[in-house]
Image 1 (cartoon, rainbow, N blue to C red):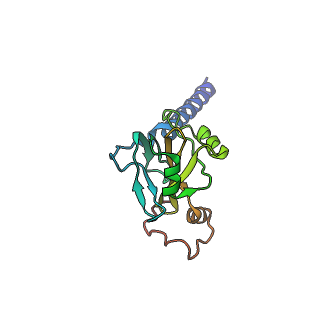
Image 2: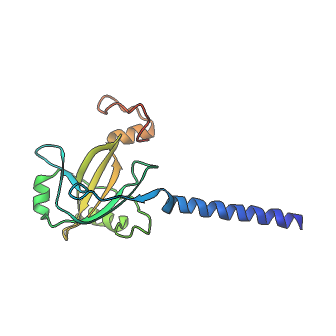
Image 3: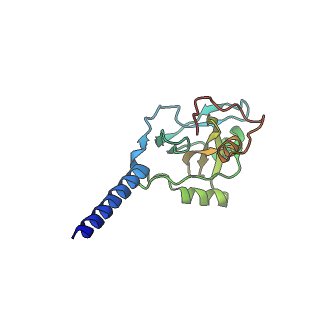
Length: 178
C-alpha cells in the first residue's frame, strides 16, 4: 500500500508539473498588445532607411517579456503591393515562428508556405528592435499582413557564441535581448 501511495504521488506531481509547463508556454507569458492607432504597423522606407507607419486596420498582437522573439501581430492593409515594394525595404525570405493556438489569426505554416511560393512578400519593419533582433512584416496580395521578430546576423552570432565582430553594435550592458 505504501508503494502505491508514493507512485501515485509521483504521477500526480508529474501531471501538475506538466500542466503548469504547458500553461506557461502557451498562455502564461503572453499578453495582448494594446494598440497604438497609426503606429502599430511600420515598414522601413527605402529613401530614409527609417521605419514609417503604413495604413492598416484590424490590428491585433501578442508579445511576451520572456523573449525578444515572441511578438506576433496580424492586420490588414489597402496599400497596393507594387507601392509597398517600391517604397519599403523588402527582404528575401522570412521564418514566421509558431504562435499559440489561441492566437488564430497568425498561421505560421501558411505564412511560411506563402513566402516560399513567392505569393507573400516580406519587408523590414524595424532593425534592431532589441539587440540582434529585427521586426519583419509579411503582406499577402489580398492585404492580409503579419509581423514577427527574427534574429538578424548579429543576433545569430551573439546567441550561438560566435564572436560578433566590429560589424555589430556593442551589446547592451544590462543583458537585454538575451
